[in-house]
Length: 93
Image: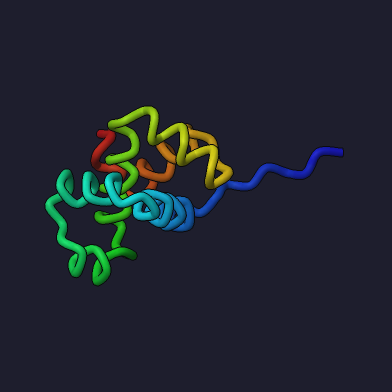
């Protein structure tokens, strides 16, 4: 019998994706450069939906990172995209 599928929490996916992104210095710097955040802002606002959405958008915009992140955090790329849509539904309107 298959285990029932669950809908992963978009905040948890985004936080795990953020940790993954920050684990590599060059990638972390690209995130800061792309979003305009500085390290202090990122630390202070890391739990905000807008910031988490920006992190996921950063990954969406570079497919190799999206695929690598998805594999490393144990989620599908579609789950990461869906998490962004849940965090920032207006982006997809």
